[in-house]
Image (cartoon, rainbow, N blue to C red; front, side):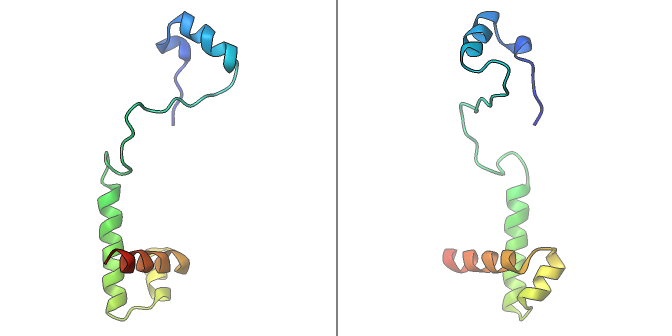
Length: 89
């Protein structure tokens, strides 16, 4: 996350009001419209495909340990993926 100086985007009056509440500290101003995770990148699709493949391989007999090694994940993460897939099926 990059920072923008308030002076570059806010009127002086607004900065003075904010300084009454948070002078000299970093503050986070959330977006007005919350976007769903992965909606602006291919991340969501990538992880859905990866998780589907993990479930498929497990169904074909690959062990949790083998899948963890193959996908560079912990065994706990593989079990979580498998559990979530069972719940949504």
